[in-house]
Image (tube, rainbow, N blue to C red):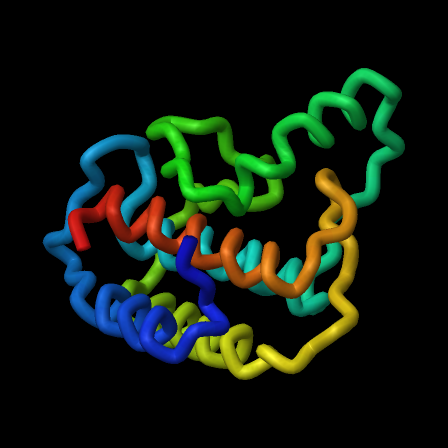
Amino acid sequence: MKSLFDADTHEEIQNRIESLTVESTPSWGKMSVAQMCTHCQKPLEVAMGSLQLGKKKLGFMKRLVFRIYKPLMYNDKPWKQDLPTVRDFIISDERDLAAEKAKLAALVTKFSASEDTTEWPAHPLFGDFTHEQWGKMQYKHLNHHLTQFGV
């Protein structure tokens, strides 16, 4: 699995983001390309600690389910199309593509530059991830949505 901490992977993702245009349309889902760029910023912000999602006390069954699904976040298998979106990551208002692309590209670079970080915030649903898992998971999420828009 690729990781955003790899220089070649970082460059690949940046090139794919740059290739998005207002004509880019999704192969699945309801987001516009600008909304997708905004949506993709959110997990990066969570990983870097600049966005805290409401911590809800999870019951035993939910904790068990999240523990079972946690490896799917960063393994080699692509995510399925039309997965449910975390409520805090749903973007429903219209956005400016150029501005959102620039913000996303800057966040990707900032995240990639944190390759020496050893302490990461806990994910609000899945708990702790290792450095390697964060890098893979962020790549996997970006790849999922960039593929959704054909880049």
